[in-house]
Image (cartoon, one colour):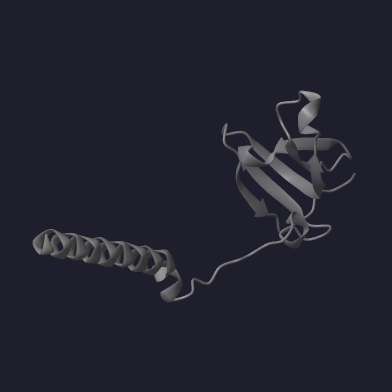
Length: 120
């Protein structure tokens, strides 16, 4: 009977040590990325921090279409419950005053233009 009690005591000790080891390792690997060097990057709170007021941009879409000399107007959020599949739009204005609505995920590259278009 003493051998059985000794066996259960040893089994309980091994189970507790194993559980503690798993907990310590999971905490270690969760915090491991935070221990490394900090990456420098550009963090934006809004699109207005990215686009300069009055500046024009050339935009390349994922479809390959290029839009030139557009000025940033703002970001529009559509009501997702209205049944409209597209929710977030970027509003840009052409040189002739017309608006262009873009889905943010459809923009591949945007580039600031050195000169502004002539408004003839």
